[in-house]
Image (cartoon, rainbow, N blue to C red; front, side):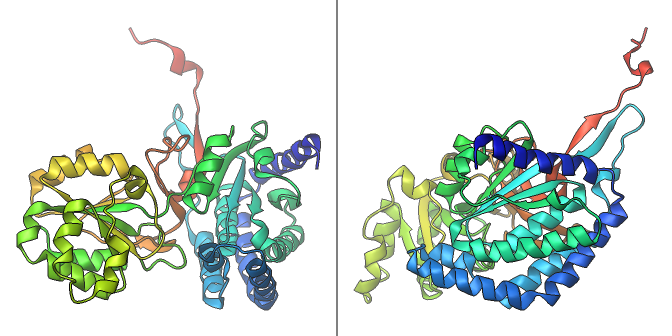
Length: 429
């Protein structure tokens, strides 16, 4: 496809977005409900296409992590279908108005999801975009081409049957490179990269379109002097149970040095028995070795202290837990701000003053204080028990995402326009 043809392809999506904004919210919700029924009817076709992708990807030497993300089990597919059903039941986010001379929430236009593995995310992202009146362009990796094609065909048939523009949900034609797509700023309004950190960073740096990268892993937990070891263990283990991607997995543990004299060694040994691979700074490594002399084979993973910046700022996306010993809360804050991915960090403390200092100074889009950090794409939120469907989480530190950091829900896929009347410009005496 030539650059001119690609621009024309994106323009069709842009034209569809203009039409979609004129369609009533109830009709968009009915489209989502029809899509859930059609997906249930054709689940076997999607799963068979996914099996073809998995077999081909093994021959292509696709990394094991991406293979796990690519695997579309019946449970994962059913969960995506349930997300679409919940989206249809949510209130219309575009009905937010603030007076006559105020702001109105409006769709972004054309949104591109560029992802590795995760075929079910194409469904969830498409549903979120349709809910708010956006058009979505899907660009999956070569490892999932059969699955994406099967899903796209089903969605296209539903669009046609319900009288929607066919280009409301479109797959980027084969042969189009990422570099060609992410510079289509004339009609493309937002790029959402999803996958391994290196993949996300590459797209974010090269895109001329606004990018809303999704962060994964490399979350920090600070264990203060007044924290509970049992609660900390529960949070660390629970944060890693996302399926298949643990968005808010606690991968780094910052510990106040006072815990070295309060049974920390046995607690760390217990974490190791739970399947975690422990690494640490030189002080943590020297301290922990005295507790594992009976099992020399377990030393292999942390004989080398984690002193390089890459070690502390890198998302492992595996069973590794990095440990840093600090002398006080100020050092913990400075360390986390320097190395955390900035999308979700945790504080455990009983001190109100420490809590206030941590919350005000940590540069993260979401801070959990004495709370579990596990991420769920479809869960109840708030005291009223309302449902929230989210694609992932972004960070305060990412370029182009500062306008809406944190949880990427349907509101993150909208923007606002200001409505002014003549009287708005009359100055007051």
